[in-house]
Structure formats: C-alpha cells, structure tokens
Image 1 (tube, rainbow, N blue to C red):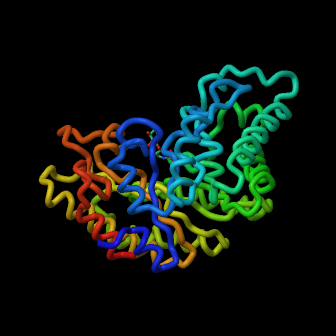
Image 2 (cartoon, rainbow, N blue to C red):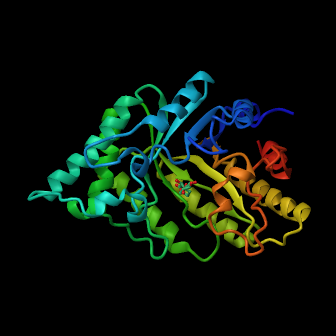
Image 3 (tube, helix red, strand yellow):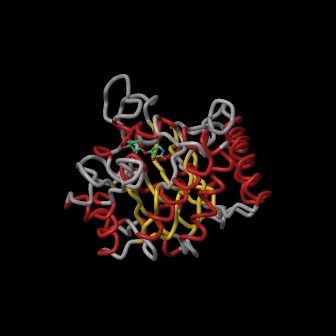
Length: 336
Ligand code: XIL
C-alpha cells in the first residue's frame, strides 16, 4: 500500500509524525525508524526541544537529545518541525524558573532570557527547521484567558512575552513558518477555549505580530461529536482562516478511553472519527502539513495520559503495537 506521505504528496501536502529521543518510540528503534522512513516526510521531537529538555539551568543549553533527532531527519531527507520555543504553562517550564531571580529590572531580564532562548535555538538549527511551534498552549481551557508563568510575570504580561517570542523568531529564522499551537478543546462544551484562541489570534493581527499559522493539535476524542458541534468547530476554523492564518495539524491521535473495550468496534469508531474529522479539515486549502503524535500504540503518550479504567491498551495511533496498520490508517489514507 502507498505510504501516507506518498498520498499526502500527491495532494501537495506532507504527512509526518512526532518522534522521541529515547525509549521504544525513539528513532533508535530500528523497526520504528523503518516505519518513520516509509510513512513520514516531516518529523517533530516529542519532548526534546522543550525548555525542560534543553534548559538544565538559566545559563545553559543541552541539545544532545534533539541533535539526534535532527540528524535522523537529515539522513532520511525528512523535513523537521520545532516544538516548541515556549510551552507557556508553569507545569511545562523548568523547575528552576519558579525561583529564578530576575533582579532589579525584571522586565528587561525576562525579555533577554526569552529572546536569547529563541535566538540560540534558531541559530543552531538554521536552514534545518521549516516550521516552529513558537508558542504552545498559552490559552487556558477553563475560561480562555492567557496563562501566566514566572517569565510572563517578570515581563509584565503574557501578550508582551509571546509577541517577543514571535518577533524574535521572525528575525532569527527568516522564511520559516511560525505557528501558534493549541488543542482548543475540540470536544463539545468548551467554547470559551476556542474564543480565547480567536482573541489571541486577533490580537496578533492587530499588533502586527508575525504569526503564520494556527497549529491545530487534533488530539481527537472518539466518538465524533454530533453534526451541530462539528459545524461549530468549522465556524471556528473559518474564523481562523478569515484572519489569513494557515493551518497545520500538529499532533493527531485519537483518545479511545471512553469506548467499549471490544477491539474491532473500538478500531472502527476511531477510524470513523478520523475520517469525518479529516473530511472537514482537508477541505481547507490552508492546510498543508499533517503530523501524528507518534505512529505506534505501544509508544503513544496516551498510554500514560488518562489511561482507560479497564487498563486496556489505548489504540489511538495509526499502527498497533505489532506495527500493523489499523482501520484508522486506511481512513486517513482514504481521506487524503
Ligand atoms: C506530551 C508528550 O507526548 C509526553 O511524553 C510528555 O510527558 C508531555 O507532553 N500537547 C503538546 C505536546 O503540545 O507537547 C504534548 O506532548 C501533548 C499535548
């Protein structure tokens, strides 16, 4: 069968996946490396570019794990995305930041730390990274307001901080796609999250902040919401593209936690959910890149994130733990 990247390429698109630096989901696993080579035209590091991975201290960087992934991509002629220059939630910033002393001029010191981070990463991977999630998940799902961290507090506001991250990235990585990435609570009953993201995107345009695309994470929850909710989701995406943003599907997988355990029926529902979602999303010419958040069930973050009550394995990836494609793979192939 044709690989997903071949099918995507036939539509002028790219398909790819997240890859880890260690463990079974790593590019060092030969079976997984083969699968990545076959299916993917673009890869992204699952964790290895986050502050927690590359900033052991306020004054140092550690690129060892990410360099391995970047080299794997280069050796296999895969494009590379950068995730992420700022996952702006306290939980996902390094511990040392919480007690960091920003001195007598905190706004200046915080701005220098943010700009230096972006400049250092962008300079190191100049010409190798085609797209950055500059800022990840700074809109709070509860009410759509902006998250704060020690960094944004020192800086005097989250808008100032995220604007600086994008402006610095534009200068440090000219010609590279700059993305705001979020999950937007695709499931029903969370309109405030999407409203908050729209407000942020409007603000970027008003202030002239250089943001090219919205990263739509696409951690779907099966089964698919009803038609009314799907229309609400489409209105959200319509509003985004009307502001002249491109779209990237950055972290596709499907949570099957709430489905009955029977495997054939579970796999069917995951596939149907995927088919309906991609039929909607592939209608947008603004969408060129689709990345899965890992290819193989056994190594998916979903095994640890909200596991099933019955402890059964999550089956939210395109390939099962024996590396066999599942109905969801065929559904995505068909949608392309
Ligand atoms: C996840 C990784 O998959 C896990 O290994 C890690 O423990 C936490 O982060 N949204 C994102 C990704 O933007 O960075 C997250 O990745 C999944 C949700």
